[in-house]
Amino acid sequence: MAERTKLWIANTMKKLLSRKPIDKIRVTEICKEAEIERPTFYYHFQDKYDLMAWMICQSAYDTDILDLDSAARALDQMKKDIIFYKRAYEDNSQAPMWQYMLEYFVTRYTQLAISITHNDILDPGIKYSIRLYCYGTLGMTREWVLDDNITPARTAAAMMYDAMPESLKIIYFKN
Image (cartoon, rainbow, N blue to C red; front, side, top):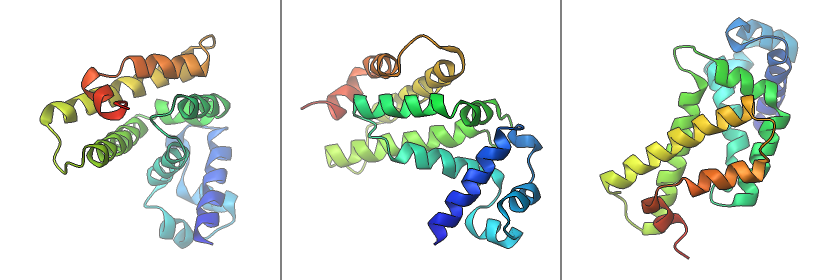
């Protein structure tokens, strides 16, 4: 039930984002549009930025970050949800969405590296490479989603994998 409510609120937020940027949307407006009480919203989310972060993480969670086809499908989906991602990338609030996305992917790649290497502590150089790669791919994904109407999703994903530092390729793709 809680998951359905969160999805309902998220879909409402997407509708509102199709009409205006996130900084112009109020929690009261989300609640009114979703036909829920404010306490229901706050039971699930801290604020509208927490909601946006959850929405982004939900879509990213289903992506196998080391599988080219899965990454390409995720990029295709981002193009389909262009308004949502445009609004997310345009956000310049005190906690911009790209920071949520960056921390999500850094954590995900870090946990994956720890799992693969069976080492609880990663070398500082590997940690740096993970952050560098995540910064780069987020920036290039933003450019691709907002400005590139030519490059196919699979090609964009392949270029991102090709740009991965060798130290990470050794960990993630050594098989």
